[in-house]
Amino acid sequence: MSGPETKPETKRRLVLLRHAKSDWPDVPDQDRPLAKRGRRDAPVAGGWLGRSGYVPDAVVCSTARRARETWELAADGLARALPVAAPPVRYEPRVYEATVLGLLMLVREFPDDWQTALIVGHNPGMAELTVGLTAPPPD
Image (tube, rainbow, N blue to C red; front, side):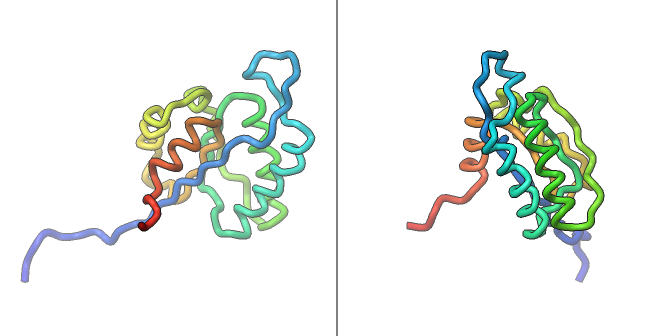
């Protein structure tokens, strides 16, 4: 029987990480740092990524300070959980204040060899993207 040649399906993962709890000092929004709780929680999230098998091939991170700090601390937690090299990070200004459509357009640009990609960003875009990508619960 002849027919079109089919390629085996490759599973890819998109991991979404909202920045950890931020502080609210009197600085521009882009410059807000993590709060004490955020500095404590971010490495825990990174450790969970490693232990759960969600080690990213690449990270796309918002340029906002709180997102950058979240990834730096999460990467430390990931390294403590698994002996892996830190994945390459691209700091992307489009992640800051991104809409669902903006995030989807960004994801479509990811190279095919990224089997697991991680975005570190902000709400409401990250939460809305999560809802949009997940199946509704059964009745």
